Length: 117
Image (spheres, rainbow, N blue to C red):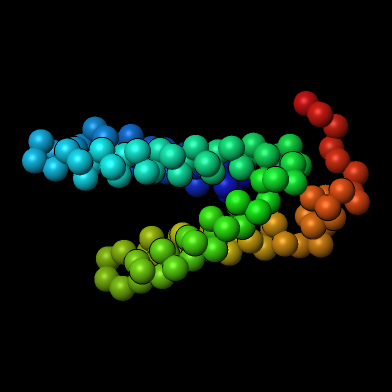
C-alpha cells in the first residue's frame, strides 16, 4: 500500500512539473516530468506485483526504497526536514514490511497466497 502511495505521489509530481514548465526551461521541466512519471509507473507496477504476491516485484521495490533513503537524507535541514522525515519513514516502513519473515515466506513460495481477486 505504501508503494502505491509513493507511485501516486511521483506521478502527481511529474504531472505538476509538466504543467508548471516555464518557456525558458522546457527541457528541464520536461525531463523532470518524464523521469518522475517513469518512476511512478515503475513503483505502480511493483505495487501491483506486491499486491498479487509476485516474486519479481520484491527486488525492484527494495532497490527503490534503498535509493530513496539517501534522497531523503539530502532533504535534512531547513524547511525541507519534514520531507526528509516523510520519505525516510515511508522507505524504512516499506523495507521492514518486505523483509519480515512472513513476507519473505510469501515471496519465497512457502506461505499460502491469498485467493485471486
